[in-house]
Image 1 (cartoon, rainbow, N blue to C red):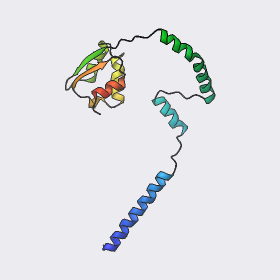
Image 2: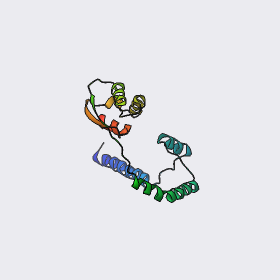
Image 3: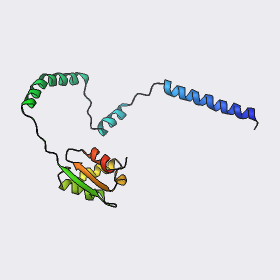
Image 4: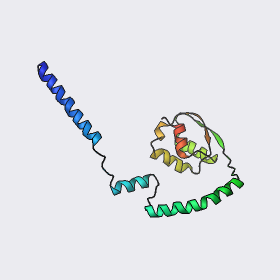
Length: 149
């Protein structure tokens, strides 16, 4: 292959890549199907409601909101937060420290927490170490704390 043929080939690749890239960024994304929307809602624990029902619920909430806030102002809520020092040693199974957290009152269920770790692929990325875990943390926060980013 000579120089001119190689340059022509490279220019052709560059032009085709530019055209494909431009069409990708200019074209609007395809609308999700109804099945994809239902799957997304189910996965994230969300519920879809009609706009009329949403507006009705919002107006009902705004009518009761001032009363609720006045009641909350008069009675401050006190929540006790427990802190537990979790020690994870190299080779510890997630079931072990999940049970430990349940016994300490940090999480509601060791099984549910272990299922959460498995579903989100965190069981293999748990780091050994010492962690301060609070009772007001959810499973996601604890998972971020003890697993590699």
